Image (cartoon, rainbow, N blue to C red; front, top):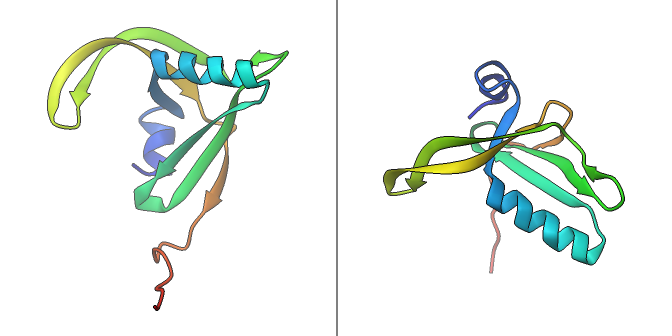
Length: 106
């Protein structure tokens, strides 16, 4: 996935199961801390991050929820689930150096 593909093919929408979002919100609410989503684009070595939920405020970005068919697991198959499409157009990002981790010596 590239930033260009995220922008043009997916209109900056990040697909996450609604169940995962609700669980994250529940933990953040219980701890009274923001719930932050991280989306790493491997091909570009870019980490997007966006506050998804804040105590006393609620959901921050626009989130559309609908039932869609997606891949069931990394091994294939399909599943009909309630999914959320998170607007990442206002996300901040950190750009890596595309060289991978620095070598370490023992």
